[in-house]
Amino acid sequence: MTDFGLKLEPAERIVIANKKLGEEPTHTTLKITNSGKDRCAFKVKCTSNELFRIRPPLGILRNGDSTSVATHVKHTYIYYYQLIEVTSILF
Image (tube, rainbow, N blue to C red; front, side, top):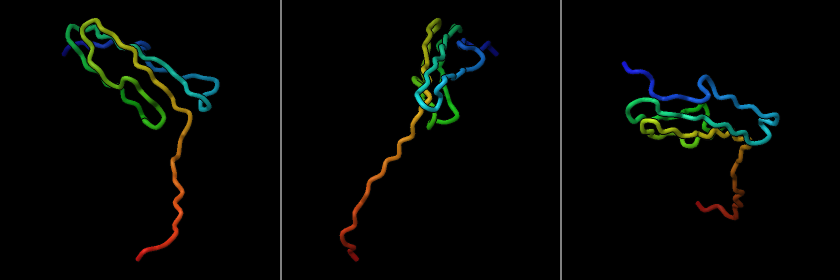
């Protein structure tokens, strides 16, 4: 088995901190570097797509290439509705 070919920064965990967490959007970045000899694909998954936006969520890196993955914590929920007025009932 070969060694893991991707280097992550931060290596241990992504810390999402903001004094107004929950009141305004919070952003953080994960840097992914391909330190292997071959091309490597990556996919970033999260626990809730309703709370987090990951861009880009997947990609392919050539040897030595790196990319930054932005993580955004959403702070608002939008509910869409439309009031429908019933003027007559057809049966």
